[in-house]
Length: 344
Image (cartoon, rainbow, N blue to C red):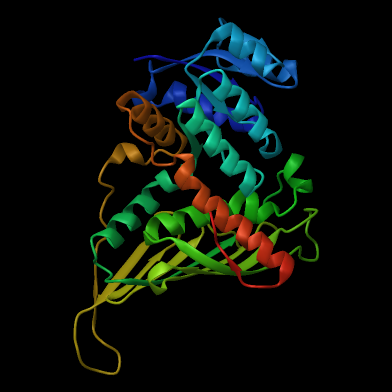
């Protein structure tokens, strides 16, 4: 089946989406882009020319382009504050929708989109592309097979000096809302249990080039006694971590270290005596499906497969809102200085 799709939001993020469709073999021939929409017509035309999209409808009015093209899908790559309106228009036109993260600019907006998708009988999913990278899939598999025993704690450090320019420089809660959601979603996926509460301290450090909230420390309580500690900054110069953060995951049998790139170190206890128990190094298994480790391409493929088969995609909005709830609970905790329950 070939899906007809319109892409809304032709800024820099759209290049990753269109490149995935053009360059990833399992996606080739599965999606026909029939329209591009952007508030700046010149930006949309330039993106069409860059990707050789000559036979597409280009415009600034999403409703008009959807009406002219009658697509199966909308790829939503607009800025977060515009997402709720864009998703509503697409669902009204009978489109399935795949949105860039974050899912919504507020938890109420996320709930509204879930209700709208249910009423329309359409799928709304979110691009949590980083849960599809190899390292996250491998760790999830290791935890799932019980090698580390019962997971008791996850710790991660994210420190990157990122000079984006553009809307992020003025965005409130920029680290938590625009970047930490990747890490929080990965932690929830790897732990396999739901978040319950959070205490968070958010600051904008001296020397920050962001207007608000470029650094945060958060302690999340998960079900089954699991604790997730997050430390992060988007204005930490001099020693960048991976974009996937640096992780320490502790279980009742041992510990896994991951640098967020290609370096893993996992050891489990192999004796029952001594002040320090003997340890045995273990291999971190390869992903069960190598095709699930290509970021945007894998999310899109999972989305298309789900629609074709009538099932829910992995990053369906009804699940992804749990990661969004972690973000907004952390923001509320930072605002109030109190522990906040995470409620969907």
